[in-house]
Image 1 (cartoon, rainbow, N blue to C red):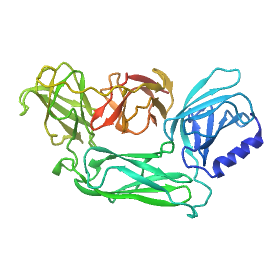
Image 2: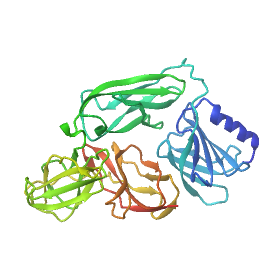
Image 3: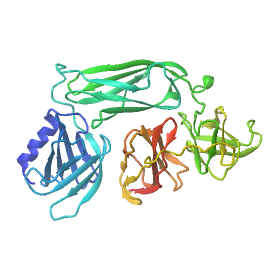
Image 4: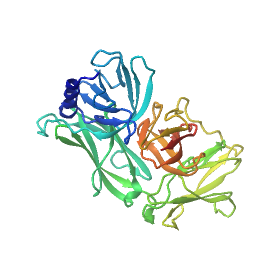
Length: 421
């Protein structure tokens, strides 16, 4: 399609139409030198217009009347049999597959580089206010380590953002998925002192209205007088028996920590050490240990200074006299999708993987080495089945597993690599 009138009309729709705030905007497969620009605009009733532009004179306009199950169009608005499918991993990361007439299908990992402005209602505040529910945490909850604040937010026109205000700190924006109406915010509770603090959640719509949907008080407990620098052990649960190696010892990250020291011992006084080393990531893979019990503890290294030890937990391997630990439920293993293993990519790197039913998030690691022992990014509660993250030039490795809640994870994917140009 090469019709300037249609392009101008759709451009006006993109920036002036009565539309949702997300995932509207300009998307590209390579921010500095894109193959195509994708102009995305959603409307009431879940319809979406996508303009695919190769240049000022070459562009194609597509319409899907319901994009909630993924954007799909079998022809453009000019009636030409060009096809496009876009799967949105989040409001900022997606994979677009285009099949032009007479050509083979081509896929592009795209990320949003410009977010469209809110509706032209001018913020009059005359419509219906937004609503929502905070599903976690509940008032009075005791929290430690990294906690995933989550809930749902809706509006009859469109949700612009969800704000999270913790204590006296400035309000921050939660991640919001307009396809599911879910919002999430990964909160490092060590950023506040132990004791009670408040959490206030506010939903903003595209008409300039807002609603405080929750204002609760929670208790933060990260190690008493240590000032939030004591490591919180996560997995396996204290006293676990019958563990079959290899398995991971895991703990929550500590704000400001450059590394950790982990000790595994034959005794609770740590006088007979099996392992004692400094470690860069928040998990350590145990291999070859049987019997037990074995005792383990971790401390954070901040500014070159070792902080206080965590509590001491114990575990037993196969032959330790206990019953077997229940393996992760079937069907909880993630499959990596894009970029292809060994692919050349540009920053920000768009990564996608299969979603797991029942997962509360995903444990995403980007690493400097092929065994993922040194991580450059480590998030145990990433809310989407995809991410678009900045990365410096060079080779990186990555893997993902499902976070099933309660310290239970699915199996790790295989480790893939990509090369950032």
